[in-house]
Amino acid sequence: MTAGWRVRWASAATIPWMKTKKYEKRLAELEIELAKLQAWITDQGLRIIVIFEGRDAAGKGGTIKTITRRLNPRVVRTVALPVPSDREKSEWYLQRYVAHLPAAGEMVLFDRSWYNRLNVERVMGFCTDDQYEQFLTLCPAFEREITDDGILLIKYWLHTSDDEQERRFQARNTDPKKRWKLSPMDLTARSRWVDYSRARDATFEQTNTEWAPWYLADLEDKKAGRLNVIRHLLNQVAYEDLTPGPLDLPERQTAGDYEEPNWAPLEIPRVFE
Image 1: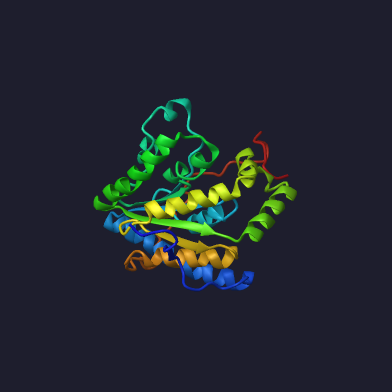
Image 2 (image 1 turned 90 degrees about the vertical axis):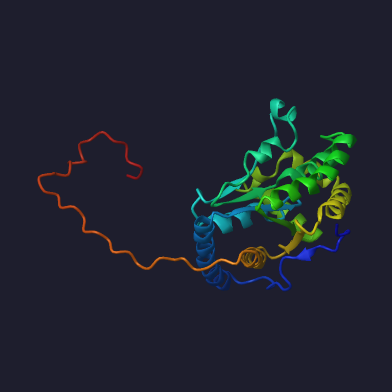
């Protein structure tokens, strides 16, 4: 078990405040590599879990969308579970997460995960002290079981400074397109900043293991941070390039006696007029 803050950085260097043009160029190059990784996952029947944790507004959702936007959702899928139902609250805590673990040929990205118990639930009082302590013991053992079974588990904690998180909160509050991101839970969490810090420290202390280490990712600059996470993720799998060459496209079938209908008189609502 590795203690305290001796966790690994996802990248040794970042590119501060990257310009959009450079970001898009580098992202396009990495998206080609992500496509190669996807093909390798399918071909080799790999099972990969990637966990994204961090404070509110740390950049989890944006990073996940950047990774998945060019990929096949049947191979690389995102799991962002809502608040558990009354039935789910009565289940074994990990039960609803186990249902989303990857099968062969899949990579699953968790936008928050079973670590809710050690962070959100702990700080907000949604679990008892006994449940918390029990899960602190259970979590490393559970992760040992899934990694021993051949699943690759990669855990990222996305980090920003206090000032940058505050700036993002204010930006969300003033932008109607982003205000939906501020939940009542987020607002309450602002008043428990230090409690969250203590919960995070305890999480690292107890769950930063040799078989499932934590990686810190600096998301102070979203663009540079996303690129660093993608590079690091790609480096966790020794994939090969299975990209097929250009395909020989067959000729389109000729119309023959088929006549295209006259769309004008048909009473089909048009999306654009």
